[in-house]
Image 1 (cartoon, rainbow, N blue to C red):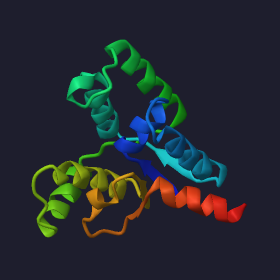
Image 2: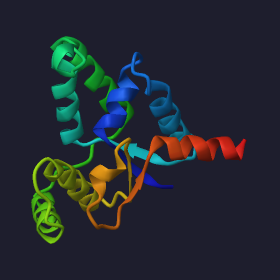
Image 3: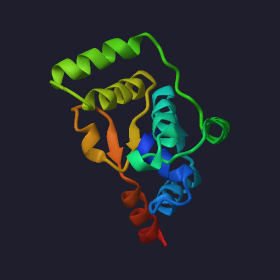
Length: 154
């Protein structure tokens, strides 16, 4: 059994049936769960989801209401466990960003990695593997890889 963090970009596509990659995100998550793997969320992923979901379409958001966004988050929380946020995450993050000289927006991704490390999660499912280029023991997987693997097994 492998433990995965679902990155924000996967969750956004999973929750939005009109996204061109919705089916790919859904199929990848289904594949993991059918294999007996576990998929997790973090508070940060859900906060990032809220930001994009409630932002107007004109500025690259989904334009959802706060009510719809809350409903989606409640559904996600019923489906996937939420990882614990411990004080150790900050120190793990600080070591990651210092050691890897992380600057700017990648700092947020390094924090996700710190949450994953603090919770003994070994894999991240993301559409943007380059976001997690920080050196660590985490395996970064793209949904396309899982769907290809599934098709090879058929």
